[in-house]
Amino acid sequence: MSALRARESSPDLFALVQRRLERSPRLDFLQFLPGPLNLSGPALLAEIRRASDAISRVRLPPGARILVQISHPLALLVTLPALWNLGYVPILSEASASPSDQQSRLEQFSPHAVLQDSQEAPAGSQSIFLPPLPLLRLLPIAARSRLPLPTETVLVRTTSGSAGRPRGVALSARQMLADARNISGTLQLSTSTRSLAAIPLSHAYGFSTLLTPCLFLGIPLVLLEHPFPELLRKALGRHQALFFPGVPLLFDLLLASRVSDNLLSRLSPAVSAGAPLPCETARKFAERTGNPLRNFYGASECGAISCERSPKNGARPGGVGAPLKGVRVALEPTREMSRGAAGRSGRIVVRGSAVALGYVGAGARPRLFRGRFQTCDLGRKDSAGRIFLEGRLDRMINVGGRKVFPEEVERVLGGAPGVREVVVLSIADSLRGELVAAAVVGVHGLREATLLRYCRKHLTAYRVPRRLLLLPALPRTARGKVDTARLHSLLTGR
Amino acid sequence: MPDLLQLKQEIKSFIVKRLRLTDVSPESIGDADPLFGGGLDLDSVDLLDLVVGVEKEYGIRIASAAEGREILASVNSLAEHISRSHASA
Image (cartoon, rainbow over all chains, first blue to last red):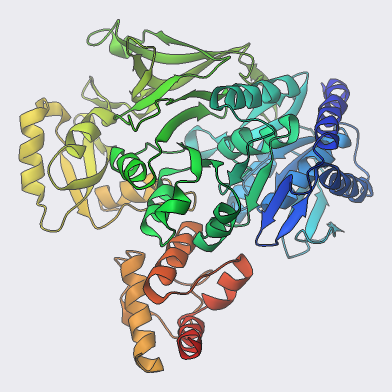
């Protein structure tokens, strides 16, 4: 449907990358560790052209959609612009997906080919050998129909959708560039600052904060193969200050590591996203480094939304700061809020030029956003315009017709003495439909009865967890997020 | 420094405690069992947690994925590496 248009806009994107890299002559524009490998902008561009040449040996139609499953950060940084150079549309996916997830992505996105850094050579695949990158494989895929894309699509991000089916988010070059500019403009990143990449570039967070600012705006980058403490030491030993986007789990591990406070203080500015930032983690980071750890908020569908900008550690539960430059945030009333906090809280709706084109999926017409993305987050603003997240509309628990926001119960339980972490979920109930259940990690000797007494004192009866489980630690996924499926089985005993 | 046998037992307890493997007993981990891609079902977060833990507990600094794969392949490989590095210290 729009392959021709997609082909027309892609070379512009590559031309932008080309101009930026040609104007970045410093020899260490890109540093890869453990290498160590240093590349100037023009040297990186030469690698991208080599990758284009190698990929072009496989015959694919103009505007081909390529499912990209590359875990190696340098390989991803090189191959994405190489695909744009050829006028192809990358569909960015997770490399560590299980075989069944990979199959599901093939069905959902019907790509012309899959590009992966697998060591095994699937039948019919072509090897792409670009030392020192891992061996890449390009596997053409036969399909009756292809993914319909909105006009101007140059990239499809995959994100977890409802009912376990991945969703595609189509982006134009203009939107990716706007997102990179919003972030760098707000956080004052420039060609004279440098960023440290320790999170996956294939996820929206790393893509927007690290990959596109490097390629489109010429912001120098230190790229780590893995966020191992020894590699952090090497990177931080070379630079006085590095913009560092991380996730709470990574900050916790770094604070528990033997990396010195002096080196950690060079992670500046440091931002956290991907999961709620515990106040305790932000407090420890600020105490140890003298710098704030800023909560950062965004979504695959609209890029970065807001960020804490206070020079001191001002982390407050749910606080995600004021909207970034170029982003407009409105709170729209929802039916669920009409009885209680209407007027103060509402669904967070984002407008701006970084909002994606829309959702895409095989066999379905794209669902367009038209510059406005309605999140599933419920929030409020304070008098200074700072946003506070209050809950997820799609996490709401319906207890016999009464609405419970798990975040509210989590806030109360999180404030109980001895509680370290808490997750509240819904479990099925034959009478009420749903019930509130909680998993808690706390200090040794913490008792379920004590916590329930605390809840009864601070929550109305139907919000008090009917099932409460004390755990030594929360189960987590490979991405470091709480494994809610596993938690649900623990809570239901199934 | 404990002997190799004792060190292996210590490492197994360390892994179970560090990664909070509530349903795994140290005794059930074989000396040569692969730590990743094997029965323990460890993922990339566990890898990072283990790398941080091994450095803190045993002073072993792992600087690349290749080194990590070699050192953390099994209890045997980790014990031998710790033993060698302490002997040469």
